[in-house]
Image (cartoon, rainbow, N blue to C red; front, side, top):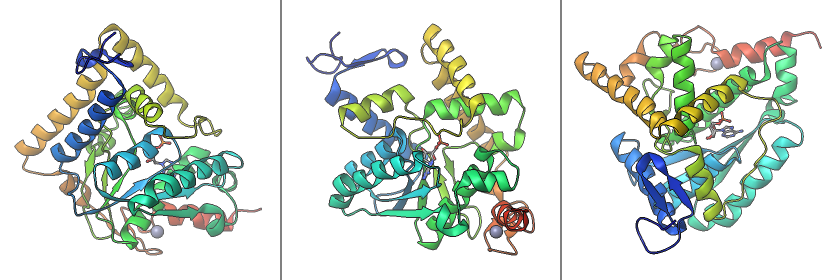
Length: 312
Ligand code: AMP
Ligand code: ZN
């Protein structure tokens, strides 16, 4: 199989684009899709400060690398969840990448340790409040991403969610008719109110396979293992279903998610509102920490309060 763009041998076929590409052409392709996502969704400009949430996995480390290669000012945040073994291994990958690739570009890594703040990791935290680990973990991560971005005046916060993640989430939200989540599922959530950082997903045009190939070709060393807390089992089923449809008819995933985004955009234009109006509704500062919330106390502060009063 030849590369469609140059005479070299192809390393990856992209049936959805009717393309096959060699290593260097795949690298160009991935970077240009990221650039296109940034421009199309007006995510950020060349002078803005970006905070990338990095987990040590392939998508987020690769996103950090691409933004730096494209010349953006991108620092990163790693949230150390205190999951024994897994968190240390993830942190090692993140720190090594920061040292070898990011710092020479003038970027820095920030780290938040859940154990330092709470005294133990998210697993213990979730057991104390009798909630699933993934739910507690999600609350902690969302809160810390926003806090660190806001307190350090980053213009925007970026995560490594890719097309597979977003299509699977869309399918889940539709199957359950989670209308509120559907409204907010966007690769660009503006900073709607004081205290809420703008959030973007620059990889929404790229599949998991393309990201994995990019990481291998560009020698990005990442944690391969999944989180041992068996996160999002449902998500894996949705991804599997979408992959089977994709094999039958290439482009399904992209048509599904991008089609949704187009409809969302049209509806917003017709109704004269933007994504930021949707959020604005009933948000007010949390009485404990000040972050915007729809309740009087935000879900993070409620979680922490519950953990403090739980019988040991
Ligand atoms: P996941 O929910 O694990 O699929 O992760 C989705 C995105 O959230 C990743 O691409 C990262 O950008 C971010 N992320 C997940 N876990 C962490 C973490 N421990 N620290 C910082 N960012 C994270
Ligand atoms: Zn709060």
